[in-house]
Amino acid sequence: MTKFVWERTFTHLEEPVLELSIQRPRFSDRSRPARRMERYYAHMTQVLQSYWTGALFAQACRALEEARAASRPFRVWRAWTSWRITEETPEHLSVCLDIWEDRGGVRPLAARTAAVWNLRTGLPLRLSDCLSAVPHWRHAVLRELDAQIAQRLDSGTSLFFPDAARRARAGFTPERFYLKQGRVILFFPMLALGSAAEEIPVFELPEPLSQNAEE
Image 1 (spheres, rainbow, N blue to C red):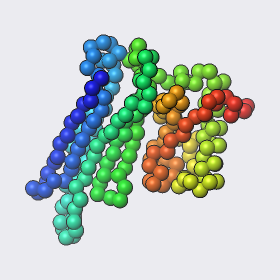
Image 2: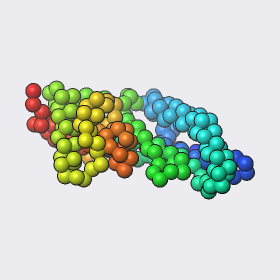
Image 3: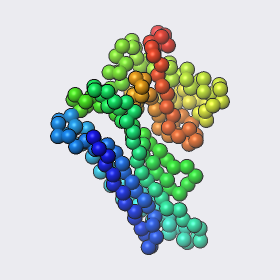
């Protein structure tokens, strides 16, 4: 596995308006599992390139025109990805990739995608695969989310919305997870549970999770 890098700067009215950078894992091995994983990230790259060089570039151009018309300074927009391996074993590879957009505002927008790859098949593991030993794993996960959100709200260490627990239950999807040091890490989209200052909320599931679940 190596690193794929794609970088471009786009201009409008002879002024830079948009800087783009995509970095992601590249699987150059010709084995079937590696080809499957590479297709996934190659498709993601194509989707981002199409959106960033199309709709986002057009929005940046309009922002520059409006800034000039109002005699306001314009700050170059930026969009980029960053990625990291969160866990690697002979059996699986957990990769977390973040997508960022800075539209000249106070705080960049962030989105996260993650996959835990079965290195034998080149297919992503499901959350149920990672929690197969936990009876009624979905129920246990939701109870744990309730408990962790309540603790953070009570301690005042978060900027979660008061109804964050309800939002977490409504918005929970088992696709949003990765592994780190043998633990399952769940995450939610930016702004899903709290203010932008929370960025991407994450929750580490304890072991054994089943002890925290009740029927």
